[in-house]
Length: 107
Length: 118
Image 1: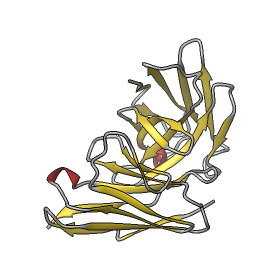
Image 2 (image 1 turned 90 degrees about the vertical axis):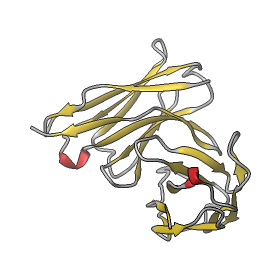
Image 3 (image 1 turned 120 degrees about the vertical axis):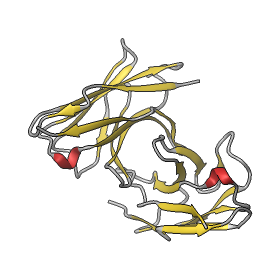
Image 4 (image 1 turned 30 degrees about the vertical axis):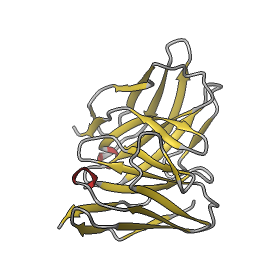
């Protein structure tokens, strides 16, 4: 199985900050990576697909980059509604494992 | 707009079978999508359980494969999850979701909490 490791596990930031979350795969997954946002008590929401493709309806302050084993999710200017937990997931081969999550909290 | 809704018992006894169904509306389960299950133990991260295609083809997480069955019912436009021999470790919120190849899980159910307890 391909293991996905996110860093940091938690992050404190302020409104307007630029935030970057990293996801590393245990082997090359090309660009088969998605990012999700999850708020408490809610289902995850797809933000980014194929490493850098913005899902329809997702604000442009979210962006993704990377290929191979190293990927990043960047929020260019943090908004109040962005405080949540973020997960990466690969889609290279089953099982499509998730990272352990990064909890983004208000400073 | 595709919508998914999980249904099933919220309480299952240890060693019993967890059974959930995911109803799909606003779209056909016979579309070119896979249909999957994800679970989240209390306070923990997301775990991919497996997926099914309308043809009946399945893929499972090896960590659960011996206990899990995912099936599809095209006539009812729904798919189902069964987990056998459950323990407290299977207590989780279970989500059903639509998988679009190269995109990911683009539509999700609201999730349903299943507690394993006597």
